[in-house]
Length: 397
Ligand SMILES: Nc1ncnc2c1ncn2[C@@H]1O[C@H](COP(=O)(O)OP(=O)(O)O)[C@@H](O)[C@H]1O
Ligand code: SF4
Ligand SMILES: [Mg+2]
Image 1: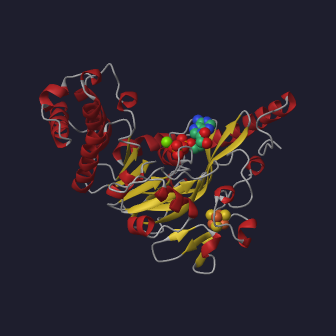
Image 2: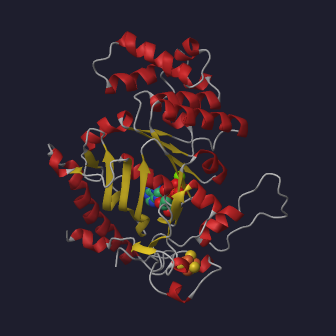
Image 3: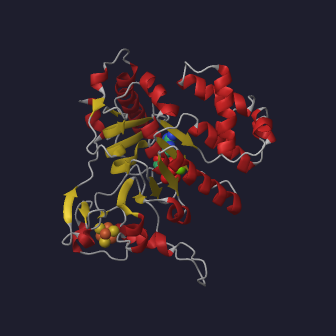
């Protein structure tokens, strides 16, 4: 079966060609969804479940159709980003944080990467909401930059080395505001550079990216991202490449600007310290699924999922002397061949009888706190199970 390969270390030539055939068929079918021109708005219009959210991820599944089988990078995740708030997405490297944000931006590496299930509802503000999964690429280009923008880890990969900083900010402004004059764009650009704390704004306006330090480049990158006052800023490991003092400055800046333009931030990081400083809500991901979500207070002061507890223990605490940082034993399961029970079971110190059954459901333990772990099965309200997609079924839809 192409969608579920048992031994990923060895694949026979026959199996490999079977997978390749399957991938060609399935990706051609999924690509056809994006290709149709003149898709009516009614096709991707949807309704927010709560108008106070900017974005709602509802059972989203994003798979990669690779040469060794279907990799379920994100598999049935649900969480919301409320208006004017910061939501931290945390988890070990490879757990699907970036794939989640790329799915929202429609920036997945296609055709191998595809959102195959669920809905991503984006609040357009005027009472309208779009399901990003069904939104045509053309329409998405208006949404990116104007409604949602992204700050990446390494500014040099997103700044264009051959254009001056000023020109790159102006380009974004003019693209999304065709009525703006060039003088107005320049004035706004200088204002943006000042807003992100660049003192010599006129000078930096005519500099090339390589003439700036890492911290300054990240500020310029933020200026580009915020140029059109987006409703949502996705910051993917925004400070990982910076040293600690600059990191703190950039985080302060992000927080301050977010309030100034009334936007929300989806802050992706493997660094719990950064989340603790910044986030109102926290979503903990493990192996492509959300294992726990709640307010910052819920997660930091009352962590419930054994994985979250492990993450907390492996975080250094200022002023506390430890011989050795805690390390969660074992490793993450292979995304091509996920078990049919709790993905954390092989690493878990709290296994109970129920854990030998199917993957645990989402359990609501308080108004704000949800955890996917059988330990709380009798203590809260069962909300439902994450819905996975059988790759073979995609050919029959
Ligand atoms: N272009 C790709 N092709 C195949 N697999 C990918 C691709 N991008 C990401 N993945 C897989 O998706 C999973 C999640 O990756 P990612 O979202 O980048 O993790 P992180 O939480 O570190 O941001 C990983 O198993 C990764 O190998
Ligand atoms: S469901 Fe069971 S195995 Fe999974 S994290 Fe909870 S206690 Fe551990
Ligand atoms: Mg990442």
